[in-house]
Image 1 (cartoon, rainbow, N blue to C red):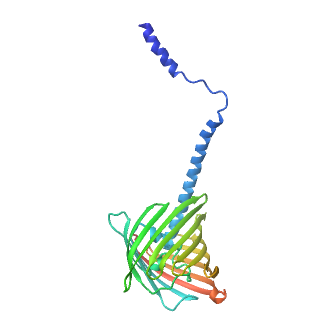
Image 2: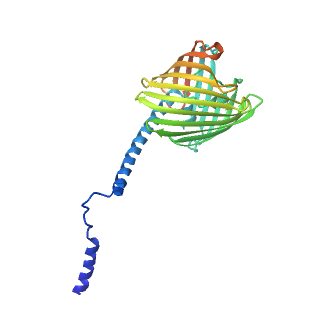
Image 3: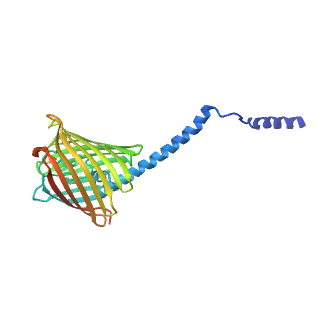
Length: 325
């Protein structure tokens, strides 16, 4: 009995005996396995924090300025009314009225939407801010309106995709289709946005627009964005090119400024610059979250005037009907 009891205890003690202490340095492989994951985890946490900070601040800037990216990707229903007047080079003596409607359907989590808009051909590009430059190398088209259905899906802060199918008015009514995708990636202190749009309109044919943005927070109220844009239309067999360097400066929760230098060009029949532009863009929130006023003095240097300075003044009143109060 005593032997039977002692034998298991002896075995158990042998199994649980602690290993001999390591008196020498840890093997190199053990050091790497311990240090590298910790370093990577710390680096990844810092990178995710900075990426999120850039994305949130850039999103707030686009939202305040009424940027096209925010309008396209917002999950809220909104009606946007703009009344714009341009004086000077590229302007006219009449007011320009624009409207866009983006309504999410209930019980679809924003994936299915109904759209209505004026001049649908002008909403295909991924311009940083609508109306930022008077002269863009776009096809001149008659005034029109459109209604469309949209399906959209996203992973917030990483990618967004939408596809539209609609009808363009007035008579004769013609169909159109367009698809848009955007992907974001952090690059250390920067964030990269790549945006692609493909479309077909009866008025302009098949086309494609690519925009690449690099963003960086300079300080808490100051964001820098470099935007490269190229639009190709099959009927023209030509690339319309545009480059913007922009600083967004948020003064307070009612006021923001944008300082921008841009250049436009064409690829065919030869690569040439068609316009240089310098501008300051001031946006003021007049009332709550739905009434805004904008004024933008601009200085153009167009090719058709032998690159002589041509001043322009643009003013716009914007009203938003959404869930904000």
